[in-house]
Image (cartoon, rainbow, N blue to C red; front, side, top):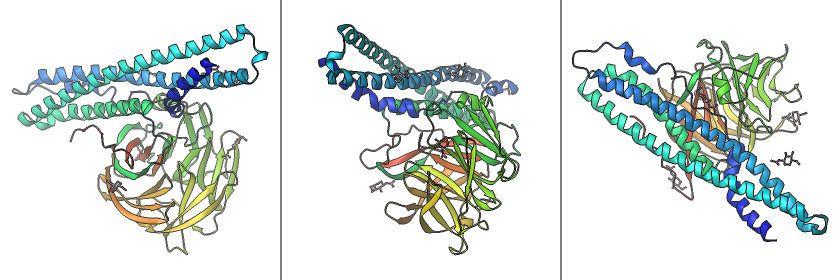
Length: 470
Ligand SMILES: *[C@@H]1O[C@H](CO)[C@@H](O)[C@H](O)[C@H]1NC(C)=O
Ligand SMILES: *[C@@H]1O[C@H](CO)[C@@H](O)[C@H](O)[C@H]1NC(C)=O
Ligand SMILES: *[C@@H]1O[C@H](CO)[C@@H](O)[C@H](O)[C@H]1NC(C)=O
Ligand SMILES: *[C@@H]1O[C@H](CO)[C@@H](O)[C@H](O)[C@H]1NC(C)=O
């Protein structure tokens, strides 16, 4: 049946991008910089300062921001459309297979119906391709505009009082990050390598992408975490979670349908942990709609499944509560998820405080494959997993953090590396990788911060990151 053959060709050309739609996140282009826009108005013109130039830049900033928001909204639409098409294609393919196996049970009318549906999907794909090409053009022109503004700002900085330009420049850095994010997600839709481990590890970490202060709007809530489910249940692919507190403990957690609702502080679920089940520390994560965290009585790993609302716990006999990360305390267990599953790290008396990495068997909630590393836990600020490799992080100075160590569970080799990245605020309580979007999530003194990662791809170079303001 030629229809089926043609259809399968269509299918294979669509599925690669459709997968990203399923992984996609509901990020909108609104950051906390909204409302801070017209800061220039606060400055009184000095006799020589070219206020007009700054006003023009400000106006352009507002325009670019607006266009960027529109593009981000479109990306969200593309992603959900791709998800819907993918489902339709799966259904149609199954239908065609059934028809091929049993041609006699179908009438000509039925066949016509299926053909019409195929035509519809085809038309939708053509439409989507056209709109995405349009989007690329818009992003390119925005990039040109931003670059031109940077040149103007740099010129102004050289010839005039630096402080006057600073606020505008900070806004521009935000716009640039936003644009970078938009371009990256756009690329991701068509060049997906999410879920792939065909690389030899992290080579670079982006600048911090600061969303905003936590949902309590309180910078005293410096303990906690935020992020996305690393293995979302169907329909929750865009969900975000947040839990924060003024001490290293966890008493409740809020779930948001998507990024927009996180930013609007509009949670769709708010779970207060039952008494006796409140946790300690901050290195909790959400996976498979389940919160994994630490409890202290007895000192153990605990989980709360939001689907069944059931709690459970496991004592890890060797694990000690005596060793915590530098700059944060009560971090006995640090949970991490990557492309290969769920992991936990801790230290023991036996290991002399050195970090032990173990895999968590998700169905049984037991630990297996324990491995001792040579890093001393109290000298480390945090640790996370990517593609079966443990990365440990330490503080360099007031604004710099460094990934300095890695342990590869595949080769059982450890090595020292140096990948520096910038912190937004001085201390952080929670740092974790999420395999669904290949990002690092940091809870940085109450702020939601994330980072894009660049990997050393063995097959193809990916050092194509756009230049940022220096
Ligand atoms: C993104 O945010 C803007 C401004 O708040 C809003 O108007 C727009 O509807 C949002 N887009 C989506 C897709 O949520
Ligand atoms: C695909 O099939 C499932 C199960 O039959 C159905 O629930 C769903 O609505 C179908 N999706 C589309 C897009 O036709
Ligand atoms: C959570 O509960 C649901 C429903 O009982 C179950 O299907 C799922 O496997 C559970 N997940 C975890 C991680 O416990
Ligand atoms: C990337 O991987 C290649 C091959 O393993 C290696 O030779 C190279 O040094 C790596 N680059 C970085 C920046 O780590």
